[in-house]
Image (cartoon, rainbow, N blue to C red):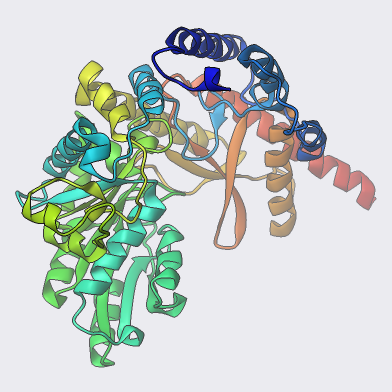
Amino acid sequence: MRSHLLNDVTADSYRRSVTEGVERVAHRLATTRKPFTGVTADELAPVISAVDLDRPLGNASAALDELETVYLRDAVYFHHPRYLGHLNCPVVIPAVLGEAVLSAVNSSLDTWDQSAGGTLIERRLIDWTAQRIGLGAAADGVFTSGGTQSNLQALLLAREEAKTTDLAKLRIFTSECSHFSVQKSATLLGLGREAVVSIPVDRNKRMQTLALAAELARCSRDGLVPMAVVATAGTTDFGSIDPLPEIAELVEQYGTWMHVDAAYGCGLLASPTRRHLLDGIEHADSVTVDYHKSFFQPVSSSAVLVRDGATLGHATYHADYLNPRRTLEEHIPNQVDKSLQTTRRFDALKLWMTLRVMGADGVGQLFDEVCDLAAAGWELLAADPRYDVVVQPQLSTLVYRYIPQSATGPAEIDRANLYARKALFASGEAVVAGTKVGGRQYLKFTLLNPETTTEDIAAVLDLIAGHAEQYLGENLVHAS
């Protein structure tokens, strides 16, 4: 069994196995004609359940053969131009190269004596990101598993910085279109969901600052403590960016922590043409960024940044076996002192390789392309009488709804749109997402692939219309 350990003796075996794996994936990428096969859970579950994990196959080639049927054949491929579903991006090759390196070396980014150069690379990237945001010389941060963890850590810091120990008095303000992790974080932090005050949005799905001001004033009148305002720079559904400068003025007035969830919109930090959309983010006390959304990185690659690095001390715990207090006096850079995690992958290497090969402008140009595509897609939808489109996009999402020409009730239209999405997914021809707006069923394009074209969008809209009409026609026959 030692022959399977990666070391100096098995280096050639490692090279052969990984090369074969890369060849299999490369073949799939080159020959995949649809983003999905349409396989159902009922069809695939018995195949995977039949695998006897107590009877190993003995070699990597056999395991890769089996992997074709249990995973590679039926995977959802985000690189396909008609994958238009969730916030999943195609990935850039330098980042995948970084993934291969970090997995093999297997550094753990908790302490210096487990990562050395990896620690310094992560810190350099944190400084680079903080500089792009404009947080100032005292800024710091740490890589995380994703936006949910980043938001949780930011709100933990906000809770600890609040001017009360009475958790029942703390309130968090965020728009009705913000990410669900704000409510989840409030629960995990012992505040309860009722601590989150939902602020209405305007017609462009941006937080209404007048409503925010009114709620902050009411909070103070009622003897409550405004712990944090969470502004969103790129909502999951609409890609809308809250009015950051106006929010910054309000939080300064009330002495409230300002967190900006830029998990989606962080790609604008590298944009050669759209950076101004994030104006005001430099006033934040903390910022969430998800490089694995708009920097075209493999999952996971995310970070939480803070204006004052000292606030990260609220997450610091010392263990004699890991990061004893003396390491602080010796100025040993242990990243576990800043993180909610202990053992942690060297995910920063993927972004490092990307910037060293492509540069920030290269990444930003790709994000600009998908934002341009969304603008063109909006024009298609706005001109198409079959569809109602909700908001002209700031980033790269489009929320829309098929509207039949014949008179049909709203509930039936809901069912037709839901059916169309499911039927499209089952066909494997394209993948789109769904959401609700005003309680009604809508569909969503999340455009993160620069290879997607307006022709792809138009073709998918025709497919959706066809499925919806089929549903309505069949129901009409059954009703008669």
